[in-house]
Length: 295
Image (tube, rainbow, N blue to C red):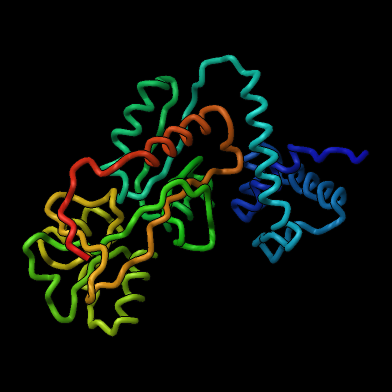
């Protein structure tokens, strides 16, 4: 019978994979760098394959490391769930949570307020930023859990919400009929990339008239008729005309919203918040119907 893998070694392995650094991983798991290096050496010897590729200060996963990573995460998750079964103490602690401001304005105040009422001893430190910034912050160890727009890069979390994307313009405005078409979007944004892609495919002339990493600024540009934009259903605001598709504005890809956890963020307070967000946002509908142009 084979000897079970060491969960402590897997925790250190996942921490290195998350941040790409032995030094930072050692800090996250509260060990010395030499202790973490020894753990990885023993894990590689146990499995008979190199798991990490070292290039100067940069560390990346080998093919075998990639195969282990998702499975190691599952093992850490199951371990946290087992520990929770036998923990009868009231949940308490602090969570560093990141969320794109596209969703923060309309969705999260209600969601987090209800969570705090049912979990008064859990403190949530919320920071709003673009998905790219949140993913970079996760890698740097600044978050325990983030919501992000999937498709931003190759990093995928737990998909929990898919929404229809809309072209948006000011009701009664002129920007929608301008040539070239003025558009507003984020600095590094998969939604803007998709919008430009479909306009190029259609041969529609456009110009990027307004660029900002702040969702409120983008919404302001749309509502004041400086440009048209593109938003998921839950981020639509009163005063916006939402267009799913017409002959001049092709359909956009659906927005995919996912949760990404740090490798330690399983069980206990982290699962409590993740479950609450997934349940709430998965069932939450736009509060006030907004005008949607006929397709």
